[in-house]
Image: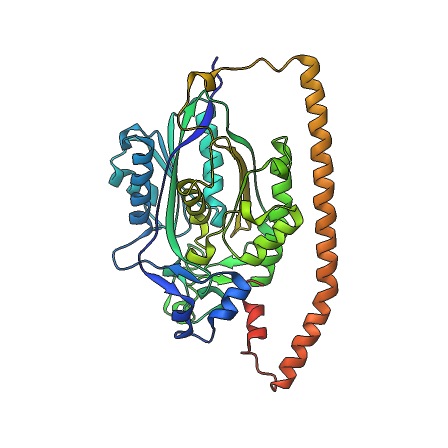
Length: 411
């Protein structure tokens, strides 16, 4: 029986032409470019224009992925859409995408917040590796601007719209998904929420007047969850692949906040130059975040043949997901297909034990850096709070200064 592997054979992306900069936001609310950049790293984001939707962006990104893979829509066996902002609650947007592409296959929508695309990629790989399907299209797409309260500075500055898509195909060429981890901390379910857009609380005149049909976020719980999950899950998924961060060629983190990414890199001792970051141009695009970064990295050559790439995402739920993916060469020569016999029992046991020692040492180093970072934050937080209190009292208790605003955003 043949052993099957998953291979990314096509990719594409679509972002709206409409650019909303920090300077544009300055005209809409009490904020400024310097403050937004220093706290988030975001300089601009893309916002849909009239006629653009989650479905339309997904279709365009998918067509580009199909063209790159040299496939027709009829070749697809499954479409997975990861999105929290579909065109309709019913019917599923994935079925509309399937129809507009002209595909004749299964289609489903996966809702896991910003983690959705990595959830979808991990799910699709199982269908491929069992031999059930040959080609699967995975899309991460969001129209978050439709659910933004443009008077809420805590969310309006963070999010943008866009879509990214990849096709994974069945192959006997080793590589693809090396390890994965998915999880949920449901105790934080209300940290990111649209209160009045579901069967428990349908939109009404009252809750629309109160903007309860718009996205609400508790910044501090999300920040704390994200900073913990980013490093912890990276360690888990990398060690599960039998690797250390030294073996990783590229890291693609969820593009939520530059401060979250920087903290994770320090704890992992991973170089910034090997990390894909584009949130300065797109903001937080939720489930579209990781595929947009991946597609750009593939297009500009930052991801090369045989590179081991770690993808990590976290989001509403609170969910998290990670994967280690080895990118097989697009063009395969007969020499590449040759299988070398290196798994002699003695050698295999020795290599396995050596790798276990490497990963154990790697995990201990990350845990030590994390504890040191948390201790430093514990010392600095009281000083920061005291300084902020002095500033507030000096301004007669006003709560609209930038320091007070930080409590409302993704700190």
